[in-house]
Figure 1 (tube, rainbow, N blue to C red):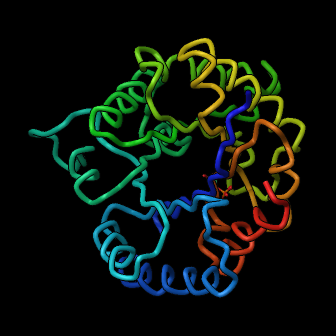
Figure 2: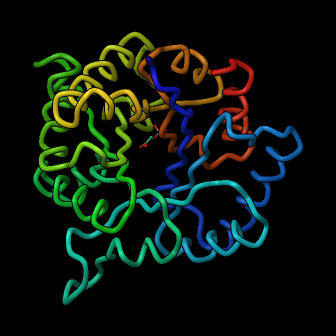
Length: 262
Ligand code: PGA
């Protein structure tokens, strides 16, 4: 029997909003959603602010009992020690982070993160009880040469090496060419690749893990196209960049879940 997967809408702020702007943003977003009573367990909302905002956002979520999950955008492969500038998963856990993004294409591109480093980060997240949101996706050159799924499938195969069957993971399919470009993948393509990624989870972690793990689509998701993605059976939510910084737009993306009754 199929396991019901709660849709996950994750807002990746990237390097935007300082800790003061974060307070105003979270309060406005909460207000926009509270009014419409849309946070009743039909959708999980995750916020992924910069490291320097995490403490502030965590305090605000706690104080106002705001039911958003907190996540970080990256973590170190190491747990502690002489690694200047790095952030341990242990620190993120202490700040009540539930999630951490691993292997975002901007980390792969600008910080030379290889599949092996991404795999080590997945292990670091799991060691500290954080759910890794494992990002995979092809560039436009990859798409031309190999089609849509070969590269993301290969990236996920490596990222899941040594992960145990009962591990909690989230996978995000983010075609690099769709990120921040305004040109999202088609729902058909998102479905095709997300289904293949679920097969990778099944192959590595087993059928039960494949059925319960959420696979997200990311890349130019907006209020205007979220519905088309959420209709696809293997798309369980979205990793949203630009549109997660605009309160009304992000609230509309989250609210839409309710309307389509997924
Ligand atoms: P975008 O970014 O929504 O701005 O395309 C998505 C992401 O990078 O996670």
